[in-house]
Length: 251
Image 1 (cartoon, rainbow, N blue to C red):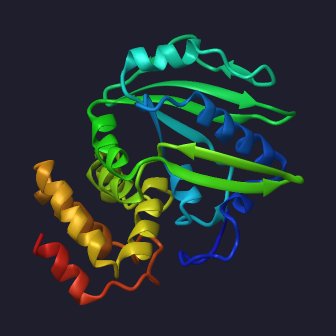
Image 2 (cartoon, rainbow, N blue to C red):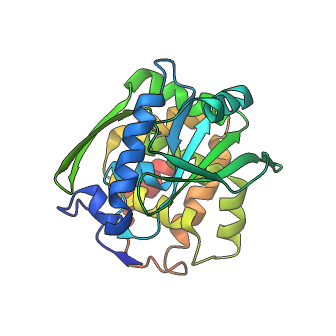
């Protein structure tokens, strides 16, 4: 994995997708735009949403996560007719049900390459993300690749909501306790923190959101633990000012 500074890299987001699969991903985003309803039944979440918004800058085999409103919305999406040129492979015969998450793993292809697309259900998380999506509206993006222009308009998770979910998730807590230097969730949380730490609106919004979730203590505890562990996690170069620590403590 090749990483750059969390500051804007000067490169379009899709340049961080391997060139062989780049056109396929852009075609998938256009297809999802076509399939999306005015009242969203799915929201693009996860690492790709952070890449598209310019927060992550590194090369990796990206995949795409779709969070569905409910199980009916997921099944309706599976049954919806797709564009003739799209091939879809289902890795799972049925929904894979876990304690905290239900998923269906697929791969999509418009060309000779494949892009993993995971369909996801998480208890109460759709409403959490949707409360911001409803206010902000869909994300509009465009890209140029291979002499073609791609435009997409998608309901996409806000990075501040992604940050809150990661800090509060049981998996994040376990990985933090274990000082897991390979944790993707920890890496992404640190990148969002670096990107937004001097943004007063970021902290104001976080305080309000976690208070409404009645998760203020857990959020504050996990975030302070993360920041105090940065050197052990391999992020010793991240600067954490005392006023930021005080702002979190006062939440």
